[in-house]
View 1: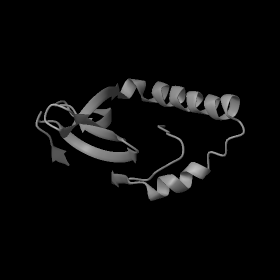
View 2 (view 1 turned 30 degrees about the horizontal axis):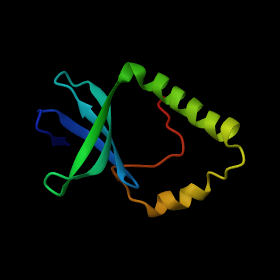
View 3 (view 1 turned 120 degrees about the vertical axis):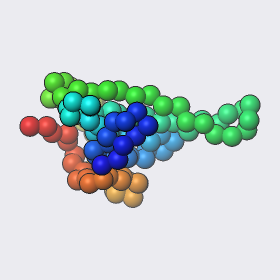
Length: 117
């Protein structure tokens, strides 16, 4: 477990690189030993002013009482795209790319669908 600058412990972290974006899935603890999830999208951007790169970040906080609703909505939405909007696309072709892409976790097991029981 690692403590960040806000004094919150990071319990688990998984990073998914996807082109110019990186997604971070982090489990953190509150001062009262409760847990929540942060989902961060980080995009590398070129900064014209100093001719360097900066990272634009967007963060979602997800609390335990919303885990099941969130996962259900995400799965329903992805399945709608796969089955109704793009039924002819073989989505397994992207599994190979995922294996080659950097998916890092501490500790981790990657699953095709998110599930919280």
